[in-house]
Length: 305
View 1 (cartoon, one colour):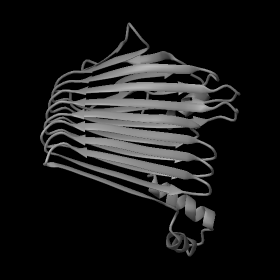
View 2 (cartoon, rainbow, N blue to C red; view 1 turned 90 degrees about the horizontal axis):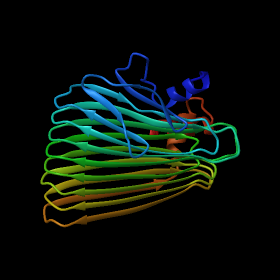
View 3 (cartoon, rainbow, N blue to C red; view 1 turned 90 degrees about the vertical axis):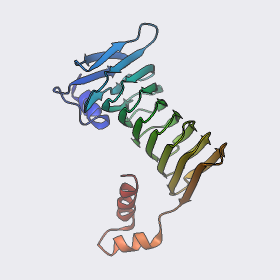
């Protein structure tokens, strides 16, 4: 990797170092560096591009990095990564993709990640997406995350689209069994004529299963965002979906909520709020010496934090 690659890598997974215990670094469609441990094993797939990551039972405080960088204009990269989380394991997984495009062709990364959580396991999943470069070619990122949770398992997912992604379709699916907990936090920034579509599809099958989704987005310029959620409660369960968005200039945001209770004890809530930055917030910051643009930037940074 050259200096530019290293800087791009830091943007999407700043915690990765040479001393990290387990990692796989993918550049322009190929794995270029990989490391496993006694408790976490990374195995390349034989039938398609991607990895199987096996976390042994009772693993405590395991940390895995699986970043992707693309610097080749015109490349379409598709990868399938499956995470097999053993019973009682506790692991943090850092992912993310940065596309640096200096030319005129479109560069694409489609990452399909599937998580299989065994009983009483715990996962924290952090992913960041970034587009950069001066070329006219688009930077396209389409992450798909599928989550299958067995009894008493829990997962926290923190997903951030930092900037510079021209088009994205973000799909997250979950199937939850008894006493499982899924928490998802999503933050998206779009500018100019960029587009972003988010789809959440979660089935609460087990008794006392729960999901909490928080989506915060900012649409600037003439960008467009769409948020669609489909939550189905098939048992005694709880779901809380929040979609909050700020629009600026000619930005547009559409929220499409769907909650479907198939059990009398399914408690499903969906909230959505879309609007511009409140005038009193701007005035308060401007009294501290900031101009209007600076005040807006402070508010947006805090909103997406």
